[in-house]
Amino acid sequence: MKTTRNTIAKAAILELITHSEVALSHAEIQKLTGDLCDRVTIYRVLDRLVNEDVIHKIATTDGTVKYASCSHSHENHSHNHVHFSCEKCKSVTCLENVVPMFKLPDNYLIKGVNFTLTGLCPNCI
Amino acid sequence: MKTTRNTIAKAAILELITHSEVALSHAEIQKLTGDLCDRVTIYRVLDRLVNEDVIHKIATTDGTVKYASCSHSHENHSHNHVHFSCEKCKSVTCLENVVPMFKLPDNYLIKGVNFTLTGLCPNCI
DNA sequence: TTATTAAACGCAACAATGTTGCGTTATTTT
DNA sequence: AAAATAACGCAACATTGTTGCGTTTAATAA
Image (cartoon, rainbow over all chains, first blue to last red; front, side, top):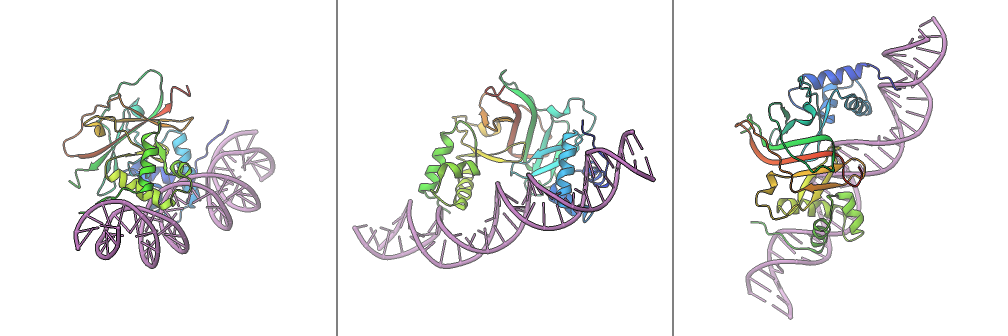
């Protein structure tokens, strides 16, 4: 079995994401980390963190991909999680208290949910 | 005010999307249309069709963007629409009968909903 | 039917995003 | 401290999306 290591880049990137109010894109993380590590390393660290279930990958309506920690002590939060993407300030936030409900046909196996609302956030309204 | 024209490329691309069982990506449309038109034209046609509300832009969980018509005579279907993205066959389909419900804080202005479920579709289960 | 107008087009060039291979570095384990 | 290999940097590439500009063509008026 593969072991995963704690490196400087991984720690720094995770730190950034967990302490950020909004979800961050690869480009944003690259700017924030400066020359801490290579562009490719950021991609690989993000993949690793997603696989380890430490962060979430969020696909916004416009097609951009962002990452957030979303780990606010909800046991089954992964299936009940809504993200909000602001058209104006481009911020992506987690709406922790908004729980989507849906009933589904039996013959589907659900492994993940991406529920993203687009519009204007309180700051931009 | 700007008028929008009916061109060969636009008609062909719309035809493809509306008659497709699954949502199509730009790359798929390009393959299907062959040398009908330029790659850039496809982007521009897709943008136009989205602006005209004839097709929907869907951001899948893995970050790829797909397009579907989704126009099955629901008056307010745009806000009550769930897409399913199959991990195995990569197909993206519309679950017309699945209606998501959610209650939201007041101070948000919702303009669009992207609700995509990931997993295995009936064909791949 | 023909002339006009500008939306839409092709092409080229570019920017952004994501991926892969490989030799090197550094974390973890022995 | 030494060995094993996960993770890294770098370079090169693939894919995806954008922009400018001169040309074509669909819609409208003459």
